[in-house]
Amino acid sequence: MPVAMDLPFRIGADGGIATTHDPAKQIVQRIVTVVGTEPEERVMLPQFGVPVNDYIFEPGGGLVAVELTERTKAQMAMWEPGVIVNDVKPIPKADQQSIAVIDIRYTRTDAPDSPDGLARSIHTASIDSRGRLRERLRG
Image (cartoon, rainbow, N blue to C red; front, side, top):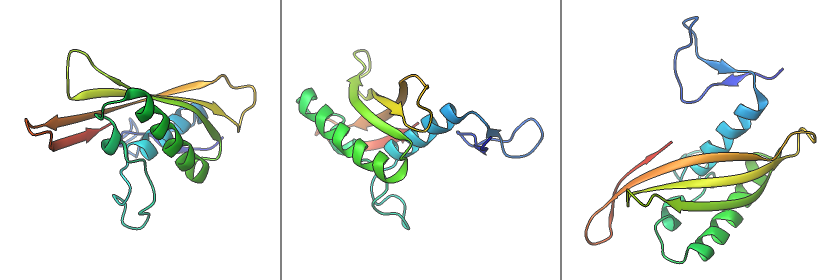
């Protein structure tokens, strides 16, 4: 059974790094990591990540969803071959303008009998009156 560091990073009950043996949880964590990383954010892997901040608050939800789906599919093919991305949908929160939930629907290829999955990633941004991004938090 593969073991991976559990995210978010924390100290486990035994005083060591918290880990997980659940492959489904590991895949969700890797998807959120790829989608939550902006390209060029990792110095040694400048092509790693999806430029979510370039799209998330743009008008034209259908076109944004198609572009995010294609970018996410390309990144998953490169970094997580055990997943086929079916759909990516940014869903702005009606009650909070600076929060959008990104639903990523995927199929696992490493376990054919596994059900289709859903990974959810939350991106928060503070945008000033001129539309400039002031702060972003990913999770």
